[in-house]
Length: 206
Image (cartoon, rainbow, N blue to C red):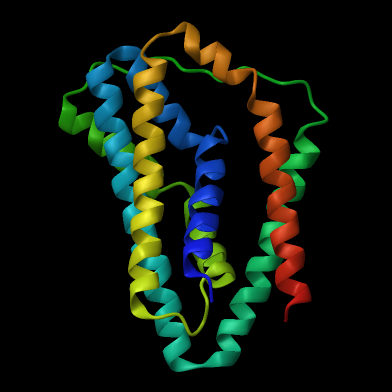
């Protein structure tokens, strides 16, 4: 199997997920508007949470595979339904006029405080839990060698950290926030279509 292609797919999919505005986007943006330093530490916190969820997702999948194959198949189907539902919600939301993303700067925080806010925001994000429960069973090959699991975790954490660090650097210049927002609907359309397609593929490949 082409594991390099698998890792490239994972990296690209995670990048699209990061680019879609949500709690992680807001916490990094709000701190970046307060100061570049705060924004960078908040981004590092988000990246650390991505590493945590990736470890949980991959370890949980490995445990399921070790215990029973039917449970793995059930998780795959539940994940497929969720991905289709989530993608459909994104596409349905395109009917509404594009709103503004509120990026009100929080009270000044120490670098450690900004990191904690970024970490906890990402760790408690419901989408992160659903992503860990559905995405990894969907994309990780059942018979992959151990290094593929390790590399998948590294790719997820690396892409998330790189994106949010770049976001913090870019949005430290306030006018760039509005420029990014103009592309939000396109990103949501792409992400929604990919989610639905991946969910349908999971059902068809069963």
